[in-house]
Length: 328
Image (spheres, rainbow, N blue to C red):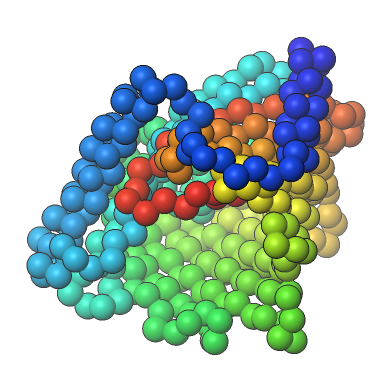
């Protein structure tokens, strides 16, 4: 298995360092697969958008039929092999129904569970998929009051409140602040994302994310990312530090090299895991079907820092009218 893993890593590296190509085709799938996927994608994407607009029109006005809408649905199937551990696979769904109401900046939102309820930073980092299928109890319905300012000019604030659909109902409240600076009018940019949340079941949580980066050239981007999180349920501070070099190979391929440290506490830091990862992403079909291949080398504390190989493979289908060609 280790030999097969090394072959896959070498293959990903060779593909990543190949010269960019201008591909005439936008799909790697055979014609018969096109005939199956295209109607499915069009039907589900139309259903997502139509459903959100009809619900919005019920609460708001007929302007909901034409106003900008940010609804989407993502379905993931993932597989993971870890040295010394059992093989894992998982399927997940992440979605958002964006419902602009009568007030310009008041949004009714229906979406899957937020990051605050998905465990520690290590648990979130270790998830195979963005959101496992957990049934209706994972839904969150709430109102978001959007900020009026551009985060490039001053702090913008979003205030939200609502309920998780479960018995008994689980109310929540959240405040999010964001800011983006261009440092000394140069290539470096610093982005800050901060959130304070309260869920009746899980208590308070606070999270801050600082992301500083710059383009290296036309196709490469360097980032340094710091995450800090505190959850009342756990009552200790967690942190992660990551360095990423993102490269867009062409309009259908991208690769990310990263080094990540996960730990706990600040006064007496304890590193839980350190790992190196290369993530290769390919647009398999017209910006709606993606493949991720991510070999990694971990040095976990629980294994006395002995190196452990891991390999993630994920397929993702994205249902939305407007598609980003490459999303890392």
